[in-house]
Length: 164
Image 1 (cartoon, rainbow, N blue to C red):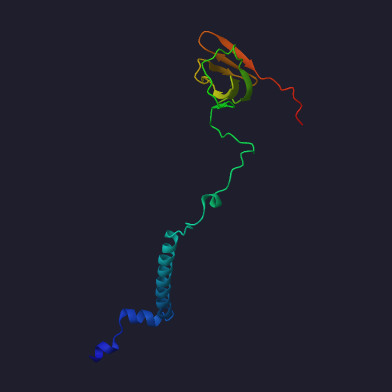
Image 2 (image 1 turned 90 degrees about the horizontal axis):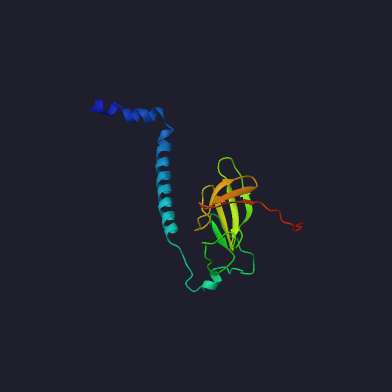
């Protein structure tokens, strides 16, 4: 039995050689337990959302001022200022088409055409609305449209309004 008392186990020898670990390991275990408790208790707070059931909807939401200018958001490709529906199968000579803008690129150009109360944003080989008119060529300042039997070229026009 005396032989057992005098022999040191490997664990005892390790702690005797590294005395600082005898204090650090219990401290580390306590910190891990505290961190787990804090994490679990804060997780419950995130799941519960307090709402005021007495609040009126008008108090919680902001009113939209309809007198302010409104903005249309792309990629809406057909736009209209008219609230009534307009037939899109039209003759371009009856109500003339107007080329109002071009974004020119060697790879993909886009044109904006106003026609019969609508504005159309089209690319190469796109039809204008539901009509048979198709963009066959887009240049820096003009666009060529074709409907299979006729072809027209629309050019950009400069506005004569003095804008300061």
